[in-house]
Image 1 (cartoon, rainbow, N blue to C red):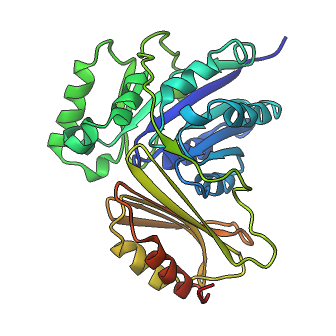
Image 2: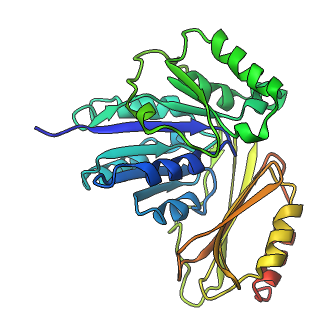
Length: 329
């Protein structure tokens, strides 16, 4: 008899702290357990997989959009590959612009019922966003929260008392009620939350059609021999992304890169970069740059920018090329 793998979907809008929370869960998991993570990113250049790999988890990526589009073959291939590794737990991180309801439908289908024990879906939300019309009017933002059994308020160290009140009021108003809610600092989700049971049928499955453009299905993370960098763009659901992959031999000027990222007005930036001071992960949300050193020597540098406005990608590319000593092609 096959043992079902406990599985959680961890959803939330752009910049809410999904990857940070998963990193903390991996750090705090039991030492004798092996966990797997399926990551979906809106951009075409995978960043989260590189960050999570540094924690020793089994990782599969489905880059290039929302899992609603990729819930067919790409997602199934990723899940199947991870399940073959017989993990003790599977975490699924849909893109911040994704439709978690479709992921739930896939994981509860006959194909996966013998293998997956789908636990509660965790919906992460920055309490500040509950009072901003840009978010509350966004269908994906609402879908993610509607589909969640558990609501986690993140970045509590950055919010004001009125934001906490807005979060508590929102949770109280939910019908059907959420199973559990909690405010957390620095992505510190308690491990026991993962074992909360899913409420069957608690979320609406009204999946609306949407348009979403993917880059060509060429190898996502490979540079051709002799190629210094590659650029990939994506658009859909009112957002644009552009990502770059640079050969590991090209080192960026750390100080200049930090200054550039601090000045960038994009809504979301993630990067794993080889710099003249070592390999670092950069995370930019609400124009706040956070940095931490990681041990991925020899790994390609990669950077992804997402914004609701089409940005001057060519100009940004020239800045990046200058920061790593490359000339324009």
